[in-house]
Length: 255
Ligand SMILES: C[S@@+](CC[C@H](N)C(=O)[O-])C[C@H]1O[C@@H](n2cnc3c(N)ncnc32)[C@H](O)[C@@H]1O
Image 1 (tube, rainbow, N blue to C red):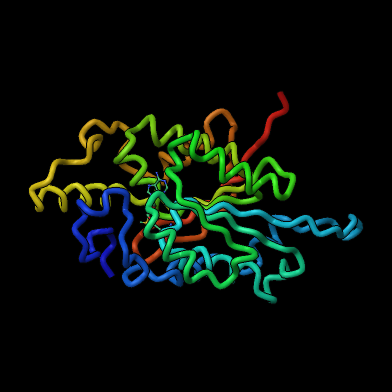
Image 2: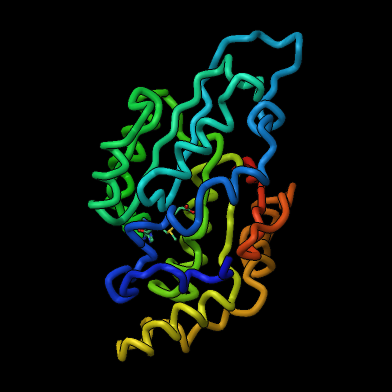
C-alpha cells in the first residue's frame, strides 16, 4: 500500500484538512487497531485489587474522527470482553471539522449511548469549549482519560503552521491523562504539497515556512515532552504506511 495520503481519488483541494470522504476505503481501521493491545485500557487504568471497585467511566476523546470508522473500531477493541476493561463503562467524544463527515458518523453510530460526535475545529478554542466541556460535565470531570490523535498532526501543521502544531499538542495534553498520537511522517507533507501543485493550486499556506520538519515522530515527542510535560511511555510499532503509534502519559505538576 502507498505510504502517503496521496492515494485518495479526491481532489485534495476539496479536502484541505485531510477530510477525505472515503478515507477508510484506503486506510482501514485494522491497520492501526492490530498494533494496539486489546488490554490497553485495562493496563493503563487498572485499579489495585484492594481499591474500591466503583466504576468511574473511562472517557476518550478522538480528534479528527472523519466518518467515525476508526473511533468505533477503537471503542470495540478497547471494550470487548477479552480487554478486561469491559466492566467499566467507556464513553467517547469524537470530533471533526467537517460537518458532512460528522453527519455520516452519526448516521452509522452503533453505540449512540457511548459514542458522541461533534462538529468542531479543534483549533478554535471558543468552539471547542462548548461541546468538550458539556461532555466532561456530564461525568463531573475536567479531563479525558485518553485522547486519540490519529493522522491529524500533518493537517494541523500545514494549515496552522509550527505555532499551530505546538498550540494544538499543548491543548490536547491539557485535556487528557494519556495521549495516543499517530504522526504523519515528513514524506506525507511533500506528497500533500505535490498533489496541490499538480492540480495547479496554491501550496498550503505554511508548507515552505515550516521549521519543524524531518523526523515528525521525534519532533512531536520533543514538543510533548518538553519541560517534563509528558512522558513517552510506549511505541506500538509502525503501520504499513510507516506511521508510528506513540503513547504519552501527561504529567500534571501541582501548581
Ligand atoms: C486523515 S483524516 C484521519 C481520520 C482518523 N483520525 C483516522 O486516523 O482514521 C484527518 C481528519 O482530521 C480532520 N481534521 C483536520 N483538521 C481538523 C481540525 N482543525 N479540527 C477537527 N478536525 C480536523 C479532518 O477533517 C479529517 O477527517
